[in-house]
Length: 98
Image 1 (cartoon, rainbow, N blue to C red):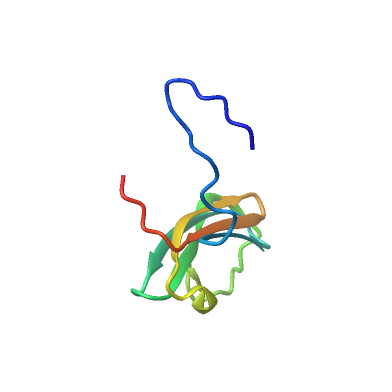
Image 2 (tube, rainbow, N blue to C red):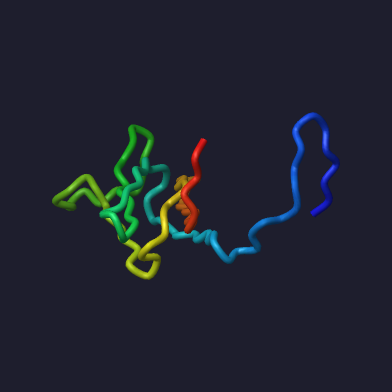
């Protein structure tokens, strides 16, 4: 990484994937919505269809697909985003205060 500071000053790299993780999950459904949460220890997310979703399971009993991440117990989901057929999830051990 090379930094050329302007008015906003950026410091050096603080983390090289020791306290952050990024995963990608392949989806059969194209275009979905996502909500993130935690039970206080284990992070989870819910996927649900949008008006533009395609390749949905018409026989499913629930609109929501629930994914928990017990292997990331103690971590937080910083963000999750669906792009076409992929779900990207960013985990962090730190709590960011903004």
